Image (cartoon, rainbow, N blue to C red; front, side):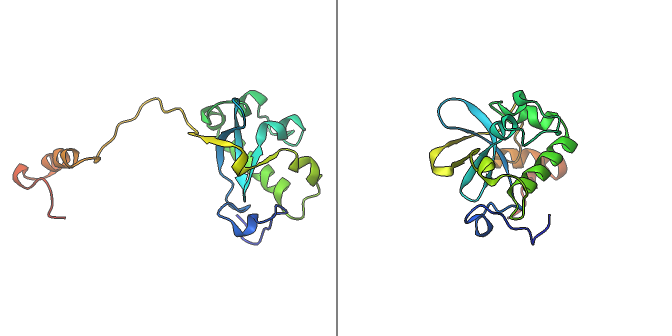
Length: 151
């Protein structure tokens, strides 16, 4: 990502979420959870960008952006999510030719929304999460009497 890019969003360039770091997440204002990104202290509602024709040509359905988790978005593939991120950069960069008021109407201050866990985890196996797990692995690879190293 180009480190010289700047955004027209006030304070974004000095924040933890500048134009070079646009995370994907899930937010809600009332009850409906939707896909978003964050820039500075603003949440960008991607379903509103889609409804306002600002994501045209990306072949991403509104259902994916109205999802309660990011699983559907990730499932469409890296090429499409990469194209989505590139479009977001184009919309949010300082020299955008798009209507900034139109884009700003798709944003909410971070303190006015609720953020949610972004993924539905279907299966998870933890390891090395306790002394007992580390001991079991140590027994497999070392002498059971020296399963754990001194550190």
